[in-house]
Image (cartoon, rainbow, N blue to C red):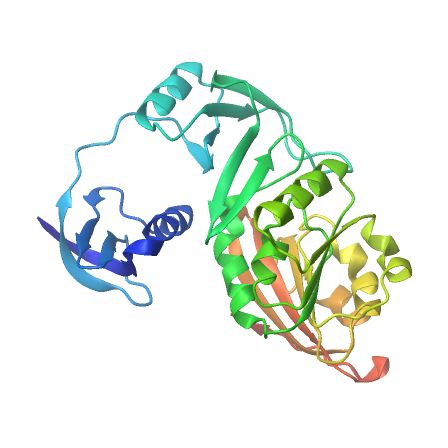
Length: 317
């Protein structure tokens, strides 16, 4: 037995907790999780909030598997390794397909091309996240499970009854997550494939308060009759140019979450301050993207200051 830090979670939410810990790189894959009453103890690599020390049984060395990301029943490999893909599928009965991306996300619809390395000839799968079930087609619409924790953070900030706008909704992970508290969620996307899957996911999760909109986000002020309490701008490579659009759909007190890929802290603060009378701006690190580049989110609280009197400070977490 070996002593290690661990997180104690209710058994009903154990699988989702395991996925979250693994996606964040915290799960200690060399030790066997164990049950204790109505809870499951997951060993973690380092001390974190809520962690305690417990003893665990070491696991046998894992099989030699290629680097990959799991999305439902699909494994996306980092290398074009057909033999490794076959080993991976054999090691995980829940997987049905192994894919290799043939390029980066590209084009107006932010899609990606894939090569099937092993298993079923498909890019479609079902993905579960915190009690929600999503139909995913990786060739039709971009999707990554890596913002699962971030979606829960934003849900924790939301107040019951909010009116929410998801400007670049994709298949709906932010929209359907926030629908649990919102009175209305407007979910917009320019990609017809993404909107088709979004509509399917709305029905699948019986969300009666999510309104899908097939449109360029730039046209939303001419389409929508509302302003919003919360706006999500999850378009890391292009959200900055839509800041004036978000500003026109907000009001004093609105919170806007602006996601961006950046190379230095505060890189997008000037554009945010130019678009909004921002009462408060908090920048948060979400995850690493590439050497010297990371995924960040700016939480902007809209104020009432006159344009010429806006502040220039920023809080960082």
